[in-house]
Each structure stands twice: as structure tokens, then as C-alpha cells.
Length: 407
Image (cartoon, one colour):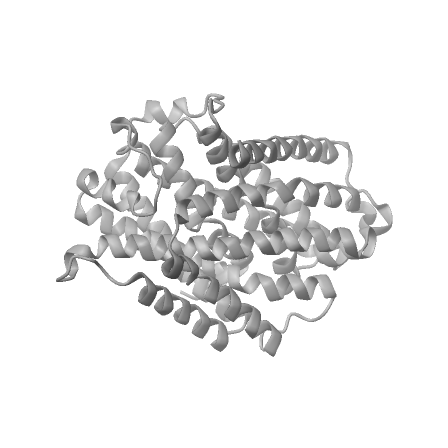
């Protein structure tokens, strides 16, 4: 048991990223993709995960070598106005995600619970949102960074087990999965929006900014560069596996019937008759764990990012930090109170998040080429070529997101 705990502690930054990355945003976009296109979008997910591995390593290595985090470096070398634009876009994307994540979770739980209530209405979305939001805030109030890591490890483990079990119950033909590795481009704006959302949830710029903070929190040094790469490899591998598991659940059931996922409850209403009550209960458990594992880091991000921007210590017990987290939790009540389509909110927020990613990557590319900063670890030709390629890829995805949102 001690060895297992030690191993989990060694990959805790990666577990944090999994918990953040595989939330209801990933579930909705991957499920929407599986329902609309089957397994034809496997290649963009695979490429996103491969690129994410290299970017996680690059951003982590930057902090290990320089001792500096991303936003504070952006402000130092590129000025306050540009960094403020990056910070604003990142925070806006995350706060929109808070609304969508909680909306997805409570609507799915309500639909699943209808047979359990005498009225047939299911559990109240508002009370469920208050319950889940209160749970997250209590965990935040009581804990410190190490406690946060343990909570996320539990959520990630339960989420992964739920989705993998469901996948094996409804897995499509292996030939269909292999077909998804062939290059395919969407033929309509809906497809471009889903594509952008899929890549945005896997390659969002916030992921790399947070990676820098986590590496600094971990206290890794030059001697830990191999450990940092191992952590990144494990994290990204699990991200890919869970993303494909979610896509498979939808592709193996909804796609053959031409059904689409447009609302959160579609994933329960449409899947249950095809997969059965037991399978859908496991899938709903995965959605709840994914939602909580995503909301927990999301509400932490605002005080972390602002502390990074201002260069102040990341003290989560200050009044300002607690108010920011409370504000994030309250945003989770928006959809239950005012209504809306949380799946669309999530896809749009992920697509919007992908728009800021090229800017974050471009600024980091400039920094890792500063010999005064990086010394012997200054980027060489292969790394620069890879960064340029990834920058072009993310720019294409950003354009796809704009087309999907506005056209």
C-alpha cells in the first residue's frame, strides 16, 4: 500500500490534469462526436493527446529550469496588457465551464433518478446543484494542496472504472475504431464545433498554464526531469483511454440509430434502452465523478491564476481566494435556476477555450528560445519545428471553433 501511495504521489500533477481534463466537457463533446460520427474522430483525439504530452513536458520543463510559472513570466517579458488578455480569456472559459459542468451533472442525475421518485420528476436539479456545490466547497475549505491531490485521485479512479466498464458493455466493432484513425474532416458547422470542442477539451491552453503551477507546487528540480516526463506520459495515456471509452459508449449505441446528443439528458434517455439500467447507472456514476473531478480544480483555478498573474503566494486560505472559489461554486447554480442547454454551453466553452491556446503556445515558444532563461535547455530545431506544427494545428482548430460558433 505504501508503494502505491508513493507512486500516486509521484504522479499527482498528472492526476490533477486528468481530473480537470476529463470532465463533463470531455464527456459531452466525445459523446456528441460518437453519436454523430461514430469512431471517425479518433484521429483528432489521438493527435491532441500526443501534442498535449509534448506541451505538458515543455511547460513543466520551463518551470523546472527557470523556477518561474507561465503567467508571471508572460507579464514579465510581454507586459501586463497582453497577459491580462490571456488571463481574462482563461478565466472566462473556466467560469462558463462551471455553469455547463454542473448543469450536465444535475440534469443527468435527474433523468436517471426519475424511476426512484413517486412523482417521476427525479431529484431536484437545484437541490442537487446545492449539494454538489456545497460538497466541493467543504472539501476546498478543509484541505490543502496534498489533500486536493488525494480527493482528485479518488474521483479519477472511480470515473475511469465507470467509463471503462460501460465501454466493454457496448463496444463497437474493432474495425470501426480503426476507421477512426483515417483522416476525416467534418462537412458542416456542427461537425466543426464538435471537432473544436474535442480538441479544446484535450489541448486547452489552461492545461499548460496549470501544469506550470503544479510543477512549481511539487518542487521538482532538474533531477526530476525524467519523472516529469513519466508523469506526463501516464496522464496523457489515461486521458486518451477515457476519451475513447466515452466516444465508444455513444458510437456503439446511438450512432447506428442516427441519434444525436443535444442535451445532457439525451445521454441517459437514449443510452438506457440500448445499454440497460445497470450499464447506464455505471455511466451516470462516471459522469458525476467526472463532473466533481472537473469542478474541483476549476474552482481552484481562479485564485491560482490570479496569484500567478500578480506574483503573490498561492494561499488558498485567504478571504479573496475563498470568495473566488465561492463565486465559482455559485456559477454552478445558473443552469438549474435559469435553465439552458448545458451540452451546448460546454461545447462552446471548450471551443472558445481553444481560441486562446495558440496565443499561449506562441508566447511560450518565444520564452523557451531565450538562452538567458533556459541556458542549456534552450529549444533546438526539432522542438521548435514541433512547436510550429502544433501551433498551426491549434490555429486550425481555433478557426474551426469560430466557424462552428458563429456560422
